Image (cartoon, rainbow, N blue to C red; front, side, top):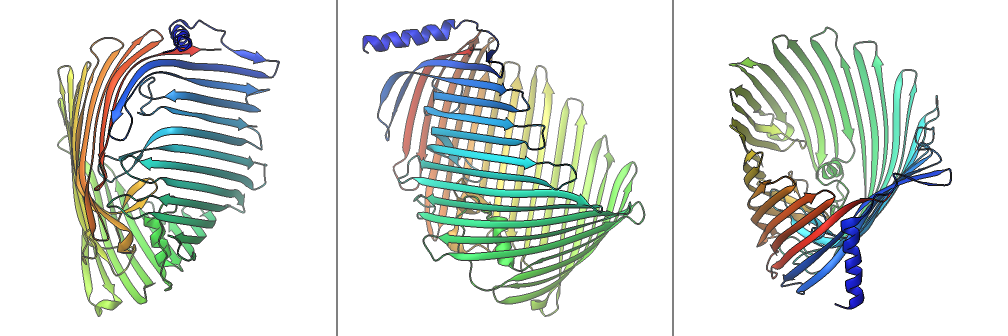
Length: 611
């Protein structure tokens, strides 16, 4: 290393170790007051892998946290946090890569009739994740930038008005794959609230634009380019009717323009109207009536399982669809040393979807009960429903759902468990029913100087007509801890259908999505962690994660895996933080050569109060 470089490193080390005390606050003139805390870091990093060049480096970094006010905290207050070359190699952040960026925000005229808020952030070389349901996520690396501005007008006896603007962009690579993904988002919003003649009124407008490019991910999907622009309008009115009744009215419209993989742009409009009225004629009785209508059932269902925000929305077919739903409910509640709720309802649906017209009637009765039992708390619920569908020649079908739960503490033991199921329950689409079950439980025990805690759960769901396999997940975890040591272990297994988004795969259920864009997933994940605190100021941790799963899209299936080791030691001595550790990442995506990365580091960080 050149002599000048050694002198710089020596100077940094001296600053880290011996930073002196500074005054508590700095004033610039009579108007600006500021405080700044931060840290300086210095360390050694060694890396190697099959996709990175082997390196051995002495590097430094730092972070500052500047807060201040101008004139008066209610006039302007701000916070600015720049950071340079921050990673687990030389600081306490969790990224394996050296990240640089800035976070900033300001409150303007807070407490006045015209408050405002503005924020800006920019990050380089940050570590993130692309989620996989029920298992370890893919690791990604990229750059992000976000800007947000909100302003309000709060004039007494006038409608409130709040306007917002936001824009953001990101570019990233999935480690072990080729190509780069990008996302760009822009959002405008306007909202108002007002009270008049006993009505509480609110309305809003929101414009949301997102452009995303999802790169080729082996075994998931081919490259997807998606652009969506949505204009949303909403008006809500609610009012108390005397002391025992109330009403609520809601009208909304969503206008969407979608371009999917350079196909012709398709405009989708969804108008929705809902109304609710409730009354308590006598104390234990509640009556409610709900009515809802949408002029684009397929569009509203798609929004419910794949909301705009990074999802590659497909082009909808040109067929019209609509839905009318009328529901009346009566419930009776008793609250004494126990709680009992009985409820009955009648619902009528009329739907037009994909060229078919459906009329259905649903009659439902349910009961909920909770009471103390054998020193614990017992709960039970059950529902029985009968429905008819116009396409079933008038034949009636029966369905049911229910659940049980119990929790009890006995000496040093604590336990809880629950079970739930549904059979032939009608979904949001009148022509489909669903069935499923699930149970969960926990058990804990206080030992001498130790505590043991374990949980487990199983959930399964499917459509009874066999159009989709549905989804399932099972998981179990256990923890044993004391003042000095903490040990955890976990295992999970999951499968189902999902949709690829800019943030990963999200589980979906329902027949509304075309099979061509669905990704079927299934696999297992397990891991564990050990933490030690043998001495004051010293902590040692080790974690291990492993997942192996398959993904299938349009008949093509490939196995994938993620495995990660992470060992870390931290020692705090006064204002010094010494750290050392080792990280290993193996990430295999489809048939591509697995990405292998090893990182070894030692470093020291010193917190400093600059002023």
